[in-house]
Image 1 (cartoon, rainbow, N blue to C red):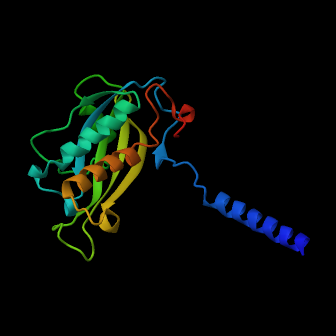
Image 2 (image 1 turned 180 degrees about the vertical axis):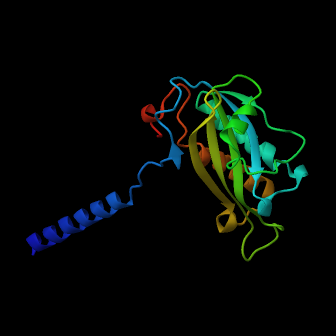
Image 3 (image 1 turned 60 degrees about the horizontal axis):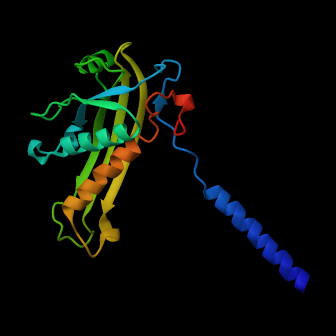
Length: 208
């Protein structure tokens, strides 16, 4: 009886270990990275714009493009980059910056930098009323980031990010400003997770 109980317990532990191992996720990989073309040392980057899909374009006075730029800059600086902001402050970008030519994107830098980065938001949802209860109010955003070599005008890296805040998990507190700030912060972290740190090549970066 004891032997049977021991075997059953051992089998249960083995199955649990196998299940936990299966739940482990592989490190995130970028959508695209050109390892061979990556500059030997890339220390500076210019953020040249945040564009929105026309279906989800916010009002200019919303300031969402500036919030995204600020959070992207935070992550870039955390990765060790010297960041230049070359984002237009008086208007929302009308074209998807993931589809313009690499040459045009590189030309937007304005000052000598190693890399040029742009962000395109292709999904955005924010509950109109935070008094809603079914479903609970939410803020959701998804975007793609693109990096170009300013000198060679060549695409180097792309990746996606997504964030969802609010909803049932935020109950009973409902704060639209907090949900939006947290959502944009999480988006920037997710968006640039696989971008190599300053001075690192993709194959040397722990996140690549």
